[in-house]
Image 1 (cartoon, rainbow, N blue to C red):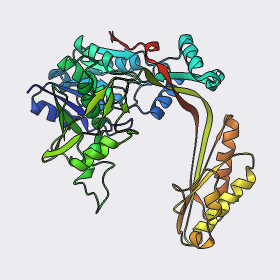
Image 2 (cartoon, helix red, strand yellow; image 1 turned 45 degrees about the horizontal axis):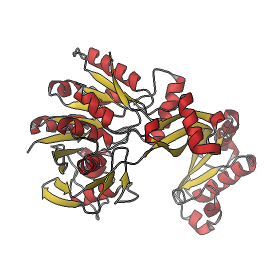
Image 3 (tube, rainbow, N blue to C red; image 1 turned 120 degrees about the horizontal axis):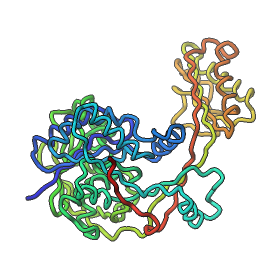
Image 4 (tube, one colour; image 1 turned 90 degrees about the vertical axis):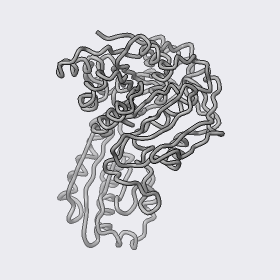
Length: 449
């Protein structure tokens, strides 16, 4: 049967940059038409990219782009493995220029690069759309940008037009897989069952090593072999949309019915109606079967017509985030860290500070500090190694800096034995979401010379 391979080489911005060669080599050995995806764009990541572009118009794309592509660019171009990614983030054109530069550095013929656009809705027309959708909830005075989640159609069109590499901004994560599959099989965009199956294949690939044992491993309960060298996933999809999922070899990690089932359910609010820009996927009758070592077949997925609206993320100026940390160790470390916290509270009564006593109470704490205040002396006495973390947000950079100065001052103005101070101060963007009519967003591709 005619099948198509899609390999994943990244599941988020900051993922390992040495995963792609094993994926590409496995795709080449399998000898089928193939694509390679890098999924690097979370909502927070896009906010950071927008900040970077504001500082430098040439920035705003994935910072590790060159590290990801340099080891595999030659082989992908030689073997006609299409590269599709959202590493364009806030600046797909800038990413395309960097890839051309990378090809020049490697003395390669310039690849044919398409950029997908239409997701950014920050112009006057876009702001009018957001005002209409959000009413008083749209804070135009603090508005920075907005991006809609677009789908796979422009990716498919670009590949049909001969693109070697497709660079996207805010497309839906599964669309990175669906686009090249649509192009290969020439599916119609209303072939809902096939679209849904390839979408769920993309859903399994989109987080990289999560489906091959990363984020799954729990020693003694869910053991994963050689997780330090975990391989990244590859799907083989047929013309009906059913697929097998395996991983790059030789590598560590595992693909079995447990890892696949966990990832199928990951971030699905409704298994009967997983909303994407391309299709509404229904996995309630999905079948997940082990068909070999590190190989699982997935079938039975159904699709329904795509939503009439698209999700849009809106970013606003969010002031500044200040964070400071200091460590206390040895006898009465917990009591000394608690005293340092009390000093900061008294010194900075106008700041709303989040405190964590790492080693005593942090992940299960709360912003108000209510649980920290209820800690008894016995809990503090048991702690011999505590790191105090203090964080606050402030509209004003100078106001946020007050916290950092006071944390540093704890060296000599605070309890005994404090050390290892670290501070950071960075600008923030706040995000909210809304739905916009599909017809108000025009997704398209263009080639970059």
